[in-house]
Each structure stands twice: as structure tokens, then as C-alpha cells.
Image 1 (cartoon, rainbow, N blue to C red):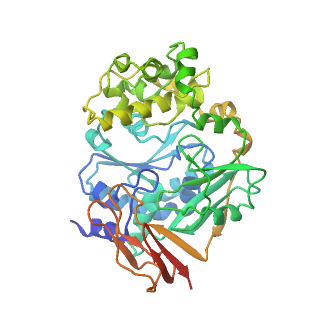
Image 2 (image 1 turned 135 degrees about the horizontal axis):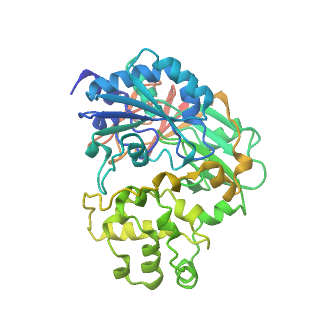
Image 3 (image 1 turned 30 degrees about the vertical axis):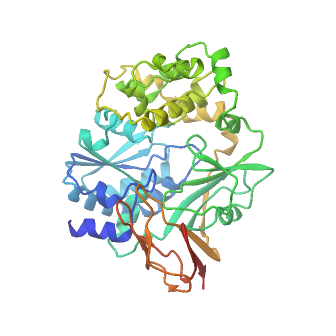
Length: 433
């Protein structure tokens, strides 16, 4: 393992914008193309934009080191073209280097990893595969910033998070890992009205009713959405969904026609999942393999279906059942990409209007660092099993000190504040001193 990879491992870096795959494992490879994803797939979030505006030089230094490590022929930073200030900062930072910028139009899901690979290289990542199968490595821009800090000996202790939606003042904040979500909400001036909260973005994020829940290494956003809003009805599946699907779904296949993964040739057909779900007949699914390529972007549910049904949830239900039965994806790209792929892209503004979210698409200023009295650091913030604690209640710890280590796949966890350990269980609680 190279010195570069060792520094990443010691810093406890995981994918900041996804499922938390350990970065020291992802970058321990050879690739033709390195892609840094600063597109911020979900609407309303502003974290990637802020990071690029503020830390462009550090990001470029990290990208140069990453490119060398994976021996890539090309390194590309992808960002939406209308992020004017961020684009200007990156253009200045890459000047005189061999790092390229890819300026994307604003559509959903532009930041989907496989969509990004296809848009930049023209190659389709196969069902059951990863970008490396087509010679690519993709990392989030906040991951790149964490790598830049790791090269200076600084581990992952903090996270940038967007707080937006129905709040007094949308903000981006920096906070220690383990900060309760309600502390972030205070930084935005609190919620306006009676709200439900979403961790992440409006489409792929999850609803939470527990604002004491801690920020993790992968938390990207906290959204306040007024109760009764149409977005929440889309996210809350009805117990009568099967009956509705049987009575209402006309098999128009609009969900399949609008599916980005299907347009890449991956045979993702949500209308067949709806058909099988409604009838209780799994034989009507057709090809099973394409189901594994559904990324749950929710475009079929939130935009394509004119009847308010939930094709994406049907897909996820079927995928879970297949996995439970031990059925695994077969690596393949079944069809040629749709020649009209670019014409099927849904502009972000149109999606926001459809979901009645346009009023929340507001700038988010940086509100500084939120520092809570106590942090609750989960032992599992990454793919793999939970880490093993190496501290006990009563121990004094310093910010950046190792407090848990992986026993298999995982990433080191560090104390995010100076203080005293008060509890060790599924999480480590530290009272700040």
C-alpha cells in the first residue's frame, strides 16, 4: 500500500456523497479516467457548490495526487455550468494543470455516478458493475477535500451540510461528526411552520422524526418540508399501493421511457415491476437483471408517473426480494444506449416546479461552524460492519484522536471534539470540554 493510500486510510476517509465506501480501497487501483463529482445530484443542496467556491486550490491539489495514484490518463472535475462562482474558482485553480472541467447542464439526476461516467466517456457501467469496469474512478468533491486535508495530516472530523427548505435562512454549515441535527436547524433560524424533516435531498433523502439523530460522514443535507406538502405524499407509500397499482396503472410505460438508467441500455423497466407488483405475479417482471441497475433516483415516481404511483418503490421492493432469495446481478449492458438520451433529461427547474419546491430553491450562505455540547458518533458510517471502539467511558479524548477501528471493511473513526467519553455502545458519546 502506497504512502498516499496509507494517509487516506489513517484519516478515515469514506465517500462523502454516497454510501460511504472506504476511499483507501477505492483508490487502490489503476484507472484510465478519474472523475470528481461536484454536480450535487439533488436539488436544493448547496454543499458541493460551497466547497468548490471556497477550497478550489485544495481540491485541485488532491485531484493531482489522486490522478497520480491511480495512474489515470485523464482527470475531470464535473460541475454544473450555472454554479458561476464555483466554476470561476475551479477554472482559476486548474489553470496550468492537466485537469479538465466538465460543465454540465442542470438536470436530474446529473450527479448520478453512472450518468456522469456515461456523459463524460460515452461508456455504460454494466448492471452489477462499478465505474472501474469501464476504466473510471468517481469520487465526490468533499471526498477530494478530505484527501487534501489528509495529506496535511488532518483526519475526518467535520462535515459540511446544507440546511434548507422551509427555514428562516438557508445555510451551509460546518459541524463536528456526531452533531445533532437540531443544532443545524438552529443555525438556519429554525423551521417555519409545522414541518417534516428529510436527511439528504428531496428525492433520494429519507424522512426522519428524530432531530437528535447525529450527522455522519455521509450526511449532505437537512430539509424542512411543511406537513401536507405533495413531496411528502410521494415519499410516504400508501398501504393501498398494490390496490392502486392494480386499479390505476395503465402500463403507459412512461416511467420506463423516462428512466436514465434504461436510456443507458441497462434494461431498467419500472412499468413491469408495477405490473408484477399489482398482479402478484413475478413472472410478469420480464428480465430480472435490469432491476439491479435501478439507483432509486425516484424520477419515475416524482416526475414520470401521471397517476401519483410509486414505481421506484416497486423496483426497490422487488430488488430486495431478489437479493433475499440469493439472486445476484449479472454483469452486462443489455441494450445499446438510447440515441435520444439527452432529450430525456429532466431540467432541474421543471422537476422543482412539478414538486412545488421552487420557492425553496434559494441561495445558502455559509453560517460558520456549529459546535454542540455533545456529539454522538456512530460506529458504522461506512460500507462494512461497525468499528470496534478503542476508548471507554471516562476517557479524555482530543479532536482527531482515533476512537474506533474497523475489524474488516471500514474506516477509522476519530473524535470530532475535545472532551470526555460518556458512553460507548452503537455510538460513542463525547461531552465537549
